[in-house]
Length: 110
Image (tube, rainbow, N blue to C red; front, side, top):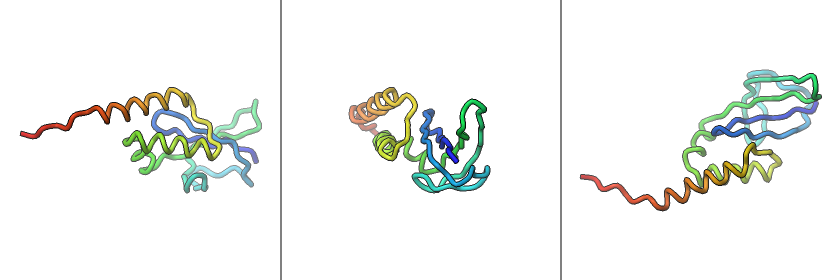
């Protein structure tokens, strides 16, 4: 069965079309980059694919906090065949965050 895996991460959507033996049930876990829980299924009569929405976890949130790690995660997912929504915009934004971190002066404590 052809399904589109969808992970909404940090305001951006990563998706990948894969073949699975069957459509997973809501609440079940599937192994993609790591085990992830299925939170929503959507079918579209115009397409033969089922959209399988995956749950973000604490590791995803941790990656979003550190822009260097977030950028590395995006690159890893791209190499694994995932499509990244608004990829160029995301890369520019993350690069700006990284550069801004490098420019920040340390805060003096009283």
